[in-house]
Length: 337
Image (cartoon, rainbow, N blue to C red; front, side, top):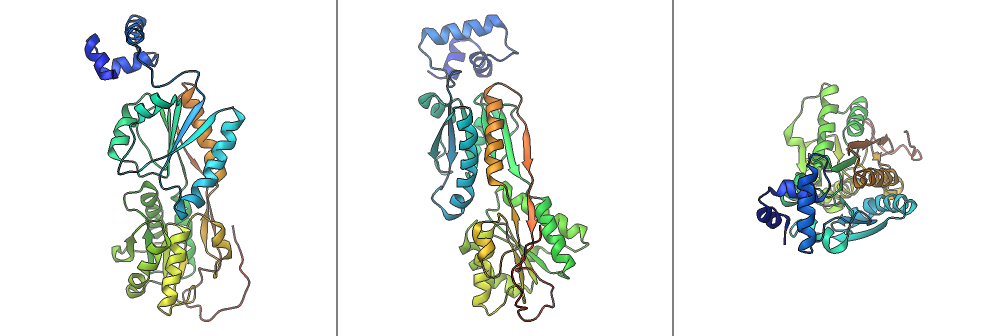
């Protein structure tokens, strides 16, 4: 039997039954006792066991190159924080094409909370999260529900700082290469790009913008596009995209940064050792994971949730240079934070 069926049997709304089963403060004790008594009489299993210390992490495409390099460090931070409070963390793989039923998932596995990361949040999951009483944590996504906490890196200010850096180097034709267009991360980083242009008094040109996905192939396939547009710099939404773009530009006979400057985002290990060393944005993945657990634990304990943003830092390396720079200067890679 579902909450909706219980509501029908008792002549109540599904929302009232859900609140009663979760001991919400705005439900009268009479209604709460009535609902819980009926639930016990039919053997209804509440979706959240108050004594449970099992957390589910929903993750899509963990085996992909980009998700593994970003996702694993975040999960490491999350797991370390969970271990300190003796929580068990279970990773469930999911697909945006076949999203799980969150309530059913928690019921069958006795999960006390959810963290959703690395997934394209579907309309079905968003709708369920907006009305659910399941404590949840969203990474890089947002819904309006006091039981759902949200966390993300600062995707805006750091990209704006990258654009400011490029403008100081004399660039005026600056492109943007984003990942999935519907992704909140992509949109926020694009916002940073726009803010950087606006603050530098550079007119936005939509023909300098292209989207794809968070892979090297995306960058590789975009090389001809940006070369033909005549841009002198491209701000990429990830390091992998930037590396693919640089590879594609080289195939066109263009040099980075002598002909085109390129920046990334994430500060993956490869960014430091790539040639040229990649200008990028450093994310603190461990801190993301640790803070995600802290917020989720607060939600599980019934405390008010919130949205927080983790600080990021632009790192300027050899892949960005003045517009008129000609020839390799032979200098060693330098990092400026």
